[in-house]
Length: 80
Length: 299
Image (cartoon, rainbow over all chains, first blue to last red; front, top):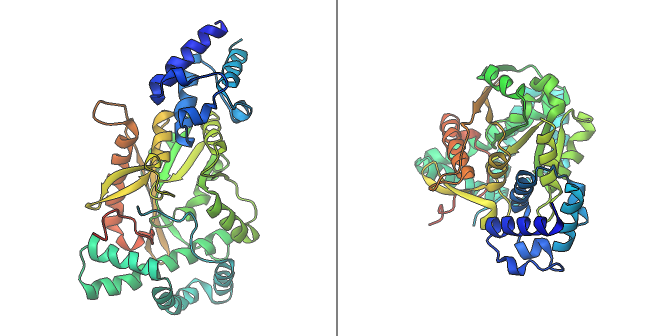
C-alpha cells in the first residue's frame, strides 16, 4: 500500500467509527483530542486497526504518536 | 451519579490488627471481636451505613426493624469475609471447605485456544479461591484501579509475599492498561475484572441496567473489552456458605453479537446482571458495595 492509500483508508475507517468529519484530520492535528478518544475508545481503535490492516499493536507503538502525521507514518512503517 | 470513590475504606492498622487477632485468638476469636467493630462502623461510617440501610429497605423491601438487624448482619458478614481472606492468604488459618459448580466447564474454557475475560463482583470473597487456580495462576491478570491496587499492595505484600498472579493497574488518565489487557489476551492469558464498580460519572464509562428492580450503572470497560476482543467470558462468584465453607460458581457467558437493537457490551452486561441478581438474592448479606449503587435510590 502506498502512503496515500493508507491515509485514505484509515481516515475513512476513523470517520465512520468515531463519527468525526475527516476534514478535521489534518497532519498536525492531535490524534486523540481530535477523535475525542478515551481509554475505552482506544480499545475500539486498536481492534479496528488490527482488523483493517492485519497488524498487531502494542503499547510501545502508541508511545510516540501525537498527531495524525505521526499515526500515518507509524502505519506506513508497520505495513512496509 | 452514584459511583465508587476508587479506594476502599480501611487502613493498614486494621489489616495488621486483624492478622494479630487471627494469629493469637484464631479465626473464631477474631469473629467474636467483630461484635465490637461492627457497631463502631455502623456509627462512624455514616455513608456506608446509609447505603446498607437503603439496600435493605429499598432493594429488599424489608421493614425498619429487620433492616436495622440486617445492617449489622451485613457489616458482620463483611468483617468475617475480610478475616477469612486475611487468614487464608497469609496462611494463618486456611482450613476451609470449598464447593465448586461448573468447574470442569470453566477449566475447559481456560484450556482453550484464546485469552479469557473473567468478570466477578463484590459479592462474597473471590480472592480466597486464588489457590485453586494452581497451574493457571501465573496466567491470571487482575485489573484494578490504581489507588486501590497501591493500597492493597502495601498492606498485604508484607504478609503474602509476591503473588503468583499479575495486576494490571488502571489509571483513568492513561492508556497503558488497555494495551496491558490486550497483550495479556494476545498471550492467551486470563484477565479478571470486577464488573460492578465504576469510578467517575462519565457516561462513556458506564452502562445502565436494571438490577434488582432498579436502575444502576455498571463499568463499561469489562464488558466492552470482552466483547471487542471476542474472547470467551466467564462470570465467577465465591460465596461464604457457613463459617468454614465457601462455594465457587462459574458461568460461561453466551457469545454476543452487535444487533440493531443492542450493542454487544450491553448484551453481555444483561447476562452478567441476570447471574449477579441470582447470586445476590441467594446471599443478600454478601453484597459488598457500601456506597449508593443505584441511580434512583434517593428519589
